[in-house]
Image (cartoon, rainbow, N blue to C red):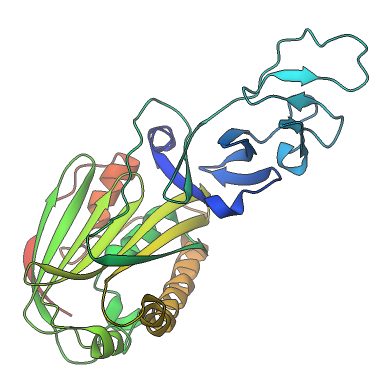
Length: 325
């Protein structure tokens, strides 16, 4: 992956409610971060004390300042060293922590590691829809995890019975890409016929799946042009082999209480996630220690685009084809 490129984007790394009165450590793209609140402001520094290298996230907040738990060095919200335990004079050494840009939006805490890219809210807020959001963590490769979510061909096997049954399901596929992402349109000739569709499908005949840098992926389920529901996952690369997923499910408002709809749907989604986690972990264990040579065919709809966007490989090919699953 092009790590330096990915560092210039914004990532949702924490739920707002997770950050309370103590410092909290988190890793993003292999960079250890410490978060804490200073009144109503969220502050983020590199999670390492410049004195002896220990994690500042194991420290505490004293008078709104971040204090290291090893020797008591204290830093203000700008990252400036303000107090050295044992010094009788005011510390005159100009020592500052490495700071990172933070935005708190939509009950999430977002971070950008470098650059000046403006923050943009990506999660859908569809009119007359209700949302349920959860943060999950999986073991696997960042790029492969995104491909798995957007790839329909594995669903007949990994999610057999849950998303697809034995009967053939045909679809016309068209795709369009840009330097920030791509979108794939599916016009379904046959109704998707897994268990989830049996209970929750109200005539879906189109799917629209999109990806946008750095890790935003969305699948919309439509009847003609009317949106019936959508699933968004923002994939966050914590470090090699560890991926955080901010999952957002949007359903239309109805006479049925929101809590009941999501309660009924959640077991099916949790089962699909369990199945994906299992295969992604297996894949990662088999490929993590060497450069894997991909075999890419026409049926592999998204891998070439992801390799181009995330790893600077050659530009992907927009697909126009008929497929049966």
